[in-house]
Amino acid sequence: MSSADRDGVHDGFLEGSLDVVVATSAFGMGIDKPDVRFVLHASVPGSLDASYQEIGRAGREGQAARAILAFRAKDLAMQRFFAAGSVDPDPVDQVANSLEDHEGPSVRANCATRPI
Image 1 (cartoon, rainbow, N blue to C red):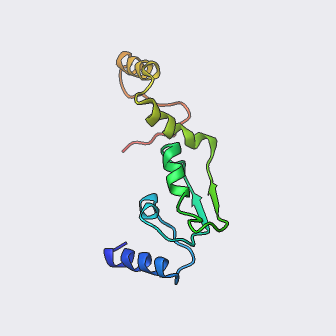
Image 2: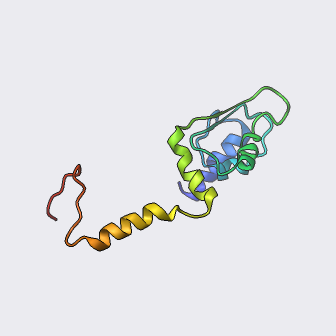
Image 3: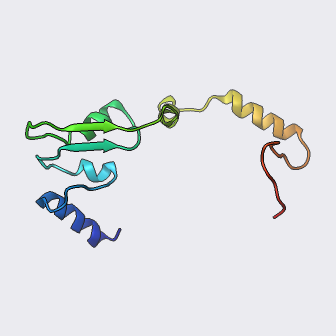
């Protein structure tokens, strides 16, 4: 979106002329609006603290609000990767060794290949 469009959405949301805004968490973290009734996460936040901060945008005036996290179990893999701070070297070594020992192109048996 252009800067002017983003500003228009932000202003419309704050003044109440927009009922729903789909945005990044960065947009949401800049919101200090008392009557947010609903926060939906479409991906897993980076930490429990980030989750509390993000869902804390809803119900600031003490009225009922709902926060929903929609995710699949495999969506957690990315967060686990970042939380670990490093990759498991064993699978990486296995792939590297396999490629080092192999001459010519490597092709997975279940992948279709075609010349470029």
